[in-house]
Figure 1 (cartoon, each protein chain N blue to C red):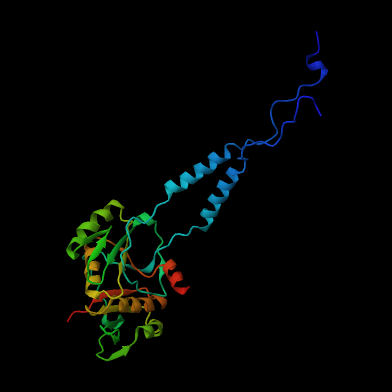
Figure 2: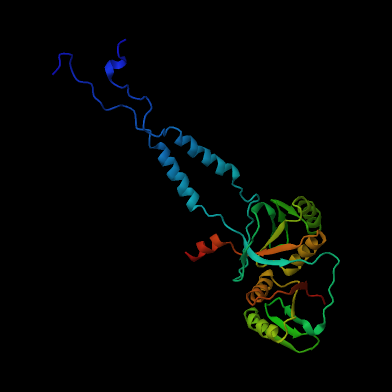
Length: 149
Length: 141
């Protein structure tokens, strides 16, 4: 019998390199994963002038558990991009609060110049909706930095 | 030189695609690191449960009445003596009051026509002074 390969050992067909062709797939997979899981604020910002406070602390709650109540200078209330009157606030907030299993934090985003009577009315509406945690939102960090520049 | 003509060039025509993944990763990591989401900031309060009314002795209450001009009328419990202050002076006052009486409650009463910002200023001062017991009301005549 003749010696296969003329006596020389046949070199292995497996290469010693890591297959890099799938790296792009991994990168895209990660990209798509982060794109899908990122949650942005759902409502659009109203044009208000923010009040300022030095003692303001970050709201320690997930973005989806924060409900913004915007209050403009004339006392109009906006929740999720829709205008409501004062007596509708309780009926709008109560089901949302129940759906979140009482984890909802209400962020009152009022204009600096809005008369306090409107803020008080919203507060009493929230009390009757059973809401416990409320935050008086102040100027956002980013817009503050922008102002400093 | 061989008779068969020109030697074939070893340089390939295609663009080298091997580094595309590296570029994609680099971009991904760059954006992951540099992205900052605006975090909401604010003064948090806890609202009372509906229908619950707490009875508090007058001597434990510090009334802070915010006028539409931003001036704060400070009144201790039952005494009728009123001191007028600016919101920035509340912080020092609260520290004094609490060291004298740890059970002190700040009753912030805002005039219905007073701008929201003055209430935020007073609340800010109280929060800076680590006030725990704050009651927010609207001023009734």
